[in-house]
Amino acid sequence: MDLNSLKKKAQKEIENAKDLKQLDEAYKKYLGKKGELNKILKTLKDLPIEERKRIGKEANKIKKELKERIKETKKTKKEKFQKEREEKEWIDISAPGKIPATKGHIHPITQIGNKAEEVFRGLGFSLIQGPEMEDEWHNFDALNIPKNHPARDMWDTFYLENGKLLRTHTSPVQIRYMESNNPPLRIIVPGRVFRYEATDASHEFNFYQLEGLMVDKKVTAANFRAIIEEFLDSFFEKDTKIRLRPSYFPFTEPSFEVDMRCINCGGKGCSVCSQTGWLELMGAGMVHPEVLKSVGYKPDKWQGFAFGIGLDRLAMLKYNINDIRLFYSSDLRFLSQF
Image (tube, rainbow, N blue to C red; front, side, top):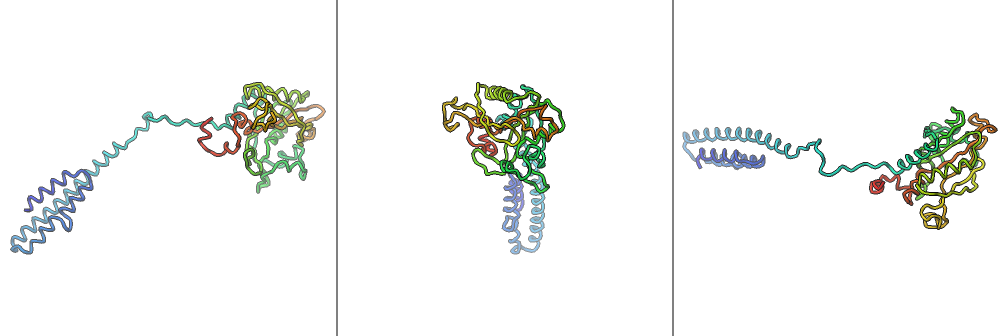
């Protein structure tokens, strides 16, 4: 093959290359160590000196031209390929999606808290919040649980290096509120609390409570019962029935546990209520005189009731869930149901 024909053939293949890979193949075919031009140059030693010079000079000129042509073509095609790829892969982020976006879900504990707060607000209660890191005075002493008192064992406490502790209930917020506000008062205190205990289907070291407090001159347990029954009827959207059982809490006297007729079986007995027909719901009682004294109230003038209920417990009853740990698992298969 003469050099002129070789040049035309190489130029044609360079121009017709569809991608950079074909350009590299063309380079190797004509300009590589075993390429067509090198094959011709290797035959020069057998030619007369004058012809050798002429063909050698022409071959080197073609080699240089082809290198420049490949370089320019590679640059042009690279820009073209890049533009085509960008156009192909370009996404209009303002265009509506073909697949509807998945909507987020309000966590079931948050939903339960919002519902409970809505009902209590309708009953005249104000919502109060306070710190999760507490001191012993507000978490224990002011609630008639002095240091070394056996009742402190009822609250497995996380103590911190700075001398503080993680609140074991939201009752210290009630103390803080009463210290700076005069009665009469009617408040609820929702929030996260912490207990140093093993986790199982019904216990967590971190959970949510809602406590309530009402103080006035003539507040009785009958007032408490009426308010709680109204709350439960509104919250569960059905007629409910409760009973009060004697109990012990250091900050109330008398103290009682509140049971609710099982909403699953209507009191007939089932696996949810362990065949008893009743579900344990909350602890409550009349505010202990010592607690009133600790915040500067006069027990002979003011009296009231306090109660505490787990929002997790309400959610389990509302949605018929048998394991509290599901609420904190971050499992979207569970959370997306609410």
